[in-house]
Structure formats: C-alpha cells, structure tokens
Image (cartoon, rainbow, N blue to C red; front, side, top):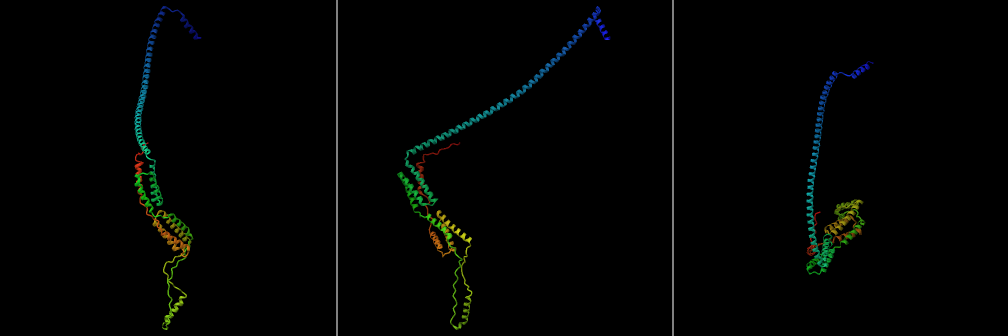
Length: 378
C-alpha cells in the first residue's frame, strides 16, 4: 500500500507543470548531461578505433608472417626440385654419352667383322674358283694321303705289316689314276715303302694265340707228379776172399752182409720234391694259365722278350710239378718247346718316306689358296 502511494505521488509530481525557474534549471542540467554524454561518446570511439587499428595491424602482421613462411617453404621446395632436375639432366647427359660411345664401339666392331668376313669370303670364292678349274681327279691325291696315314697307324700301333702293305698299294693305285708325271717321285717313294713292308717277316700271330689258348684248356688235365726222390748212390757189396789167411776179414764181411739184410742205409744227393696239397695244385694250374696268357699278350704286342720269358717259366713248372711219364705231360712240354723256338719280334720300318711327300703335295695343290675364316669376337 505504501509503495502505491509513493508511486502515485511521484506521478502526480511529474504531471504537475513546473515553473519557469524550474524549467531553466532543468535545461542547464540537460545541457551538462549532454556535454558529458558527448565527451564520453568521443572517448569510447577513440578507444574502439585504436583497438580496431591494433587488430588490423596484428592481422596484417600475422598474414605477412604466415605468407613469408609459406614463401620460404615454397622457395625451398622449388630449389630442391631444381637440384633434382639438374641431377637428372646430368645423369641423362652421362647416359647419352655412354650410349653414344657404346654405339660407336659397336659400329666399329661391326665394321671390322664385316670387313673380315668380306675378305674371307673373297678368299674362299677365289679358292673355290681355283678348285673348280682343276680336274676332279686331283681329289684322288687326298684319298691317297689318307690311305698312307692309315698304313702308318697299322705299322706303329698294331704292328700289322700285311695290312699296311695293302693300304700302301691302294694309295699307289690312286696316284697312278691321276696320270701326272710330276707325281713320279711320290710313286717311287711308295714303291720303296711297299718293298720295305713286304720284307718284314710274317708272323702267324693268330695261329700262335690259338695254340696257346688250346694249351690253357689242357692244363687242368695234366697229371701231377708224386713225391720226387733222387736216385740213391750205388754201392758194391763186399766179396769174401778164398784165402784161409783172410778168415778175420771174411768173418767181418759176412757179419756186415748179414746185418745189411735187416737195415739198408743209402745216401742220396738232391732235393726231394714233396707232394702238393689241393690248394697248391689249384694255384699251380692258375699260375701256369697266367703265364700262357702273358705269352698271348706278348704275341700281339710283338714283345719277343716277354714271350720267351713266359713260355720258359711255364715249361719249368711243367717239368717240375707234373708227371713226366704221362703222354699228356710230354705232349704239353713238346708244344711249349716248339712255341718257344719261334721268334715273334719283327723289324718294322721307322718311317714311311712317301707320307711326307704326299702331305707336301696336298699343301701345294689343294690348300695353297684357302684362307681360314676369321671369326669376330662375340
């Protein structure tokens, strides 16, 4: 209630018209208030402007700093990329130079190989043209050279003079078909070589080996000897004299003869060969076969010394350990003696003079213009 009254009083006072003095007072108060408000408004505007300017300057500085940092990063990135581009350009330049150098080397090598092949081709064409100009029978000379070389192998590797002679005669026949007077020295050398080969003693190697093989099969059938005891020395029996005066000597002689009828002592000089056990008999047979096999190998090798040593050892064993009264043993020993008397060694020519002459003629005729193909490095 009190508040309402005060409110009404204040409202009544407000609505009551004031006096002129009061209005003047109020007007001056209003002017002062307006001045205060105007001065307060001016100061606030200045502060706000300063703040705005500071904010603008801060923003501009921040933008400038941020832009400077971005420019620096961008510049560093560009510099790095430029450096990489420079390195790539340098590497590419080096690769181009290396490729250019390799290409030049390849061109040089190719040119060299082409020149070599062209030269070889021209040489080969020239040689082929020369060969075409010859007679076809010239190739018989090359065939004769081959036959002579085969004859040399037969002589020095196989010790077969008969086959070598046949080959040499075939070579002489080939050269004779050429009908060339310039080859007469070669034919003369061939004739000398053929004569020397025919002078070589012919040994029937196959026949000797077949006989030795047959004797190997007979070894197991040879009868072994019993214990061999040397012959005892012959002693003369004492004779009793007819004189009475020799009665003592006659008595001694009679007693000695009586004792000798019970015990006989005989002296024997020589080695007693005992009986062989089954194992020893087997080894004896195998060793005897081995000696015969050595003799066969010596026949094919033409080794006269080894041949006679093997047969001599076999003959000694046959006489010592086998029964000499048996017909098989006697025939075996006789065959060994007959084979041991043969000589299997032959004197073969040291060289064939025609081989060198034919080779030289081949070099002169067929190979003089043929140059070897020179292969380039791959």
